[in-house]
Length: 599
Ligand code: HSE
Image (cartoon, rainbow, N blue to C red; front, side, top):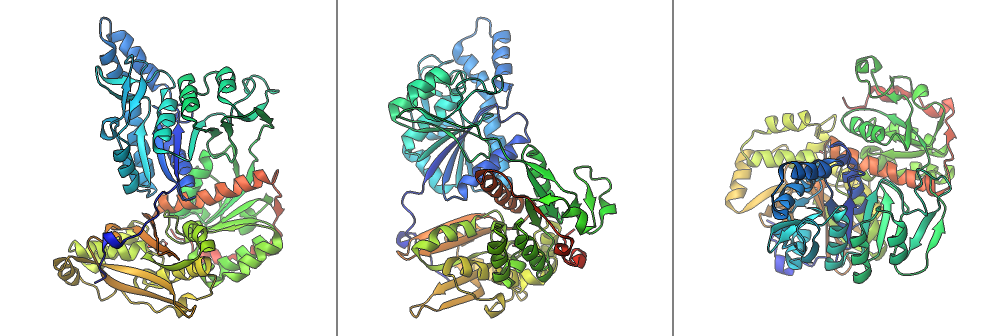
């Protein structure tokens, strides 16, 4: 059994911390929390931990003010505050659920749990205190901490609200108290303008401006009290739209005007629409301002007759027709999708895929084609599903990686978790298949092939070495039983499928997929069911952990969509799209669709 001694465990001391504030202008419907979760995930995969501060859904606070006026004749402000604050509590819980759906390790925290206190008038109070160590402890244990904005405890009244727009004040004050490197207020405009941009097309956008100018021109885009609090704490603010690269910076220094950034409309082709593709389709539809969709390629278009979300076709030429900016390959299989990606990239089409089999087996050819075609290839979802493993390995690789190991196959982990609960192997596998975790041929999960493909990709990204999945020795899960797992539990251990790659003293890579018992206090033991947990040691032997759901529709779709959004920002930064026309020969012989596409 692998021992785990927390006292000898070195972890990064100060992970960068980001505060994201989502206001009512971008939370207009419960469906909007999925986009807010995407925006949070964007920062998580950059290596930031995120404090998410939410307002109530649009209109809810006004309705609560109305109710407090209607029923509050003769009532106290203290009691009215208890009513008016409720929209934020509901919103924080909805935000937490949206993050958990995509597999983010999330803590939803009420103000009293972190000693968040206010003083002054209960309906227009100012933040006075925060129990910083208890908030830092929450941040240590989770990747995203969700806090209702606008409200706090109050020594006299018990509860208070911070005035209209008060969620901005919560974001600024918490950001200042925990030393966040970024406080980003997400609005329905992409920054601060000299005038209302909806009413005046000639309004100019600020790239940056100082606090006093912001007080004059923000016209309620940011709460005045929040600007003043930012000024006195010296906190720089970013004012940005959801998904935007750019932001107006409110900080000390002269004002600078910049041009308006119009989002570039991008043509998107979805190739395959199984469990993950269907989630990606929902994301793309919710950003119809950014993406126009080609007909979607599926094996059996007739079977989709009642799905009115898009037009489905079985003809690759129709799916790849017109000018294309991004193709999303979600067909399954290895050889044919790799060939298709190579041809698309060579023709200048950007490609996103979650297909680890294709990337692991054919790593070089699509990368070379991307260089030839000046196109981009992204495959973040290929390892870890929603857990940003590839991104973390890429970020650490330039400084050197000594070793990486982890639980990387959701199906194997799901089966082992179920076996430990006494469920027979066949039933556990059937459930993993029903939940959409397992590969089309689940022997890839059980025999370690899927984990070996992921490890092969990580070895490329982390060590720049080519070790094919076939070269990696693999232990099978097939002989594991509930009895073996019960035995392990008696010894204070739990079985995990662990993928491991290490750089030895001779500069050689050793790699393996093993089934091993880990102590119950080991972080891998906390990854249950479809969760993945990967540890990466840098050359100082500091352990970096990535945790999240490694399989399933929503986590994987979140990672694919994050890649699509990254490409969208890159195309916008390029100053427009360079849509490529796909020649008929590019569409390969798409007998490919008959095989891999999952249901
Ligand atoms: N079958 C894979 C797993 C899907 O179970 O992890 C995600 O790669």
